Length: 234
Image (spheres, rainbow, N blue to C red):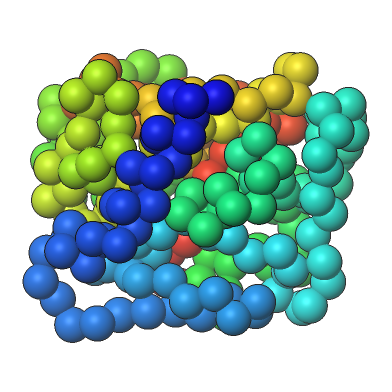
């Protein structure tokens, strides 16, 4: 518990200095249906949120269910969100964790004019910041060289795993919620992101940044997993 508190304190400090942790650019923001305001950053021909999504309603105003109990989380096939360790204060810096069903819901998880990125849109980002196309297409592996560091924040990662944040993406190590037992893990060491793209009838493509790697991991996971979400402008 002491370790988690220390990590969260560090992430709170990071949120305060975030404006100094990205390349100079005009002030860019987007607001979700709950009134949350997010900084955004242009990377190549794409404009991304520079913070994790924390919305609790779909774009049409319908509430997204929130499940604290592990059994409820892993057994639902409806869209759902939670906060790390079921503590709403963790959402202030880390945003919410969503299952893939929320991402796929036709009511829209992203703000108007935005969407959750596909696997291909993640590849476009990775190639723009230096990854070659053959590496980008590699399945379930660590890819590239230092592209992960370019996306990772400069503060808050375990084991000297901080990034350079050259892109202004400011990926935070906010962990995940398991699709197996419904427990939480890897706060301080993982930044995990869902895509909209299915691999098969039960799994979806995701991206993970690790504290002990400078690369970007492209893998698959079950749809019940709880990962962070970044949105991209239409």
